[in-house]
Length: 259
Image (cartoon, rainbow, N blue to C red; front, side, top):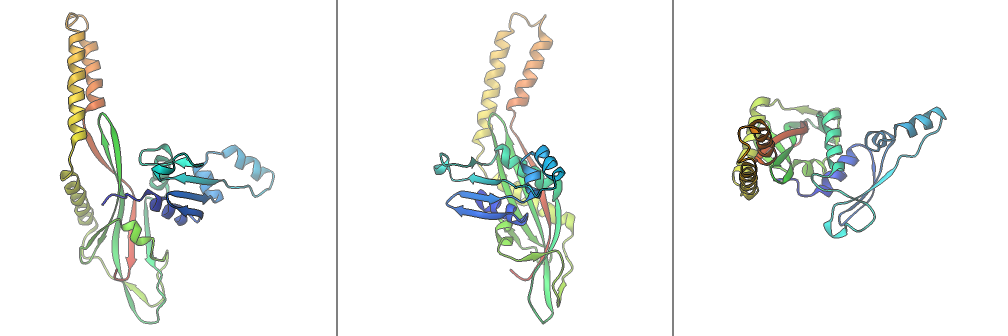
């Protein structure tokens, strides 16, 4: 269910933002940025200010990403779940493209129905002694209730546009939006419930050990340093207590022919 193919996720992201994919082989992804995406990701405001002041076009940068662990030594930026670059990309999606509405491009001369799919990309964060993140992409057909995982992979193969094609019409959803969200949450809840959570047990064990060590250190100073000990104990609990959170990155309604 989780987006295990980070390479495909990145390729889809940049293609959706009109960046040219120069290479995409065996976990090596080379991208030619547009000016807009250079401004969004490369943190070069003074360069672009200078270029525009001089009346020149400017040269957006190229990025090379390595998603294959066996190729980490090659030239490029090693990117993985939790890496600063991926967090930057997710923030960009969240801030600028949280919700969209798109239609499948259909070349037809007969009346063709397009069915509504609610698509959500979300991040699940596991916080404890160690941190881990997973990306999920779910699609819910809002008429039949069919649910699909890795929906972004499906959408990557479908031509999409912002306006509906001639001779096409949309089918009204039967499932309400709020109900659709709850169904997706239930799928993620069930996924997490069925995982082993050794990481949480390890975090709780580490927390208990650090608290015992702290209590031993303050054993002769309980009266004079009680507030300090309690503050440090709260910091230990904050650092180690296992927490799982969901965060919607973006999503939208996609009107598609039958998949």
